[in-house]
Image 1 (cartoon, helix red, strand yellow):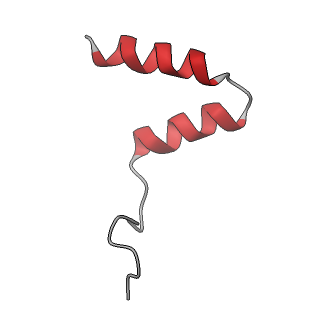
Image 2: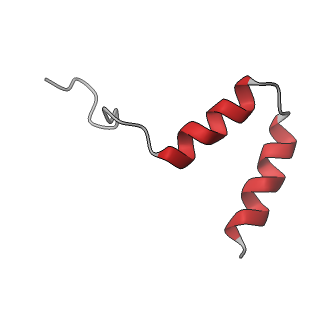
Length: 41
């Protein structure tokens, strides 16, 4: 019984990690820089 098709029961590990970093107080611009740096291998 899913009301929202985009709501997956288990979060992807990477997404959960980014949310955790944000929750412990890492500023959004720092997360964006890390995301871009990681994505550009």
